[in-house]
Image 1 (cartoon, rainbow, N blue to C red):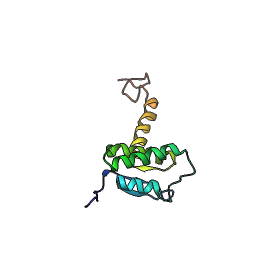
Image 2: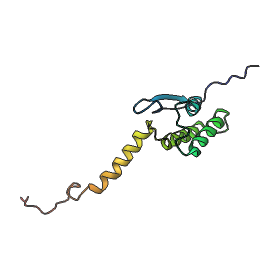
Image 3: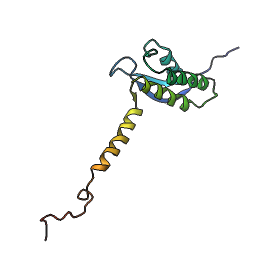
Image 4: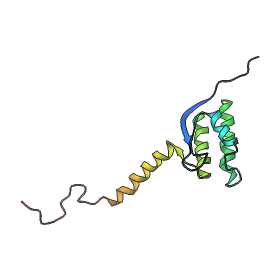
Length: 121
């Protein structure tokens, strides 16, 4: 009667749960659920809806009712709602935001168009 199930793997992530700049790694849905239920999670400081959604999706993923990526994404959203950084997800968002910020700064001269200066041959 062996009911032990192996862990449900996820794309690894690091969450800033132990304080600013202090990250812990999660490699499974079980790790995500453990973080959500830990004393370090700021349960009373934020809107409980993202936390509850992350916890329920983790449970469903552990029981194989949901894809583990759904639980991972719900966890990332709950961490962000609790003002925690998640790597590598936040690095990808910063790259996207950086590209969006750079586009308006591009001028015709940067794209190689002649801007009418005194440079003639």
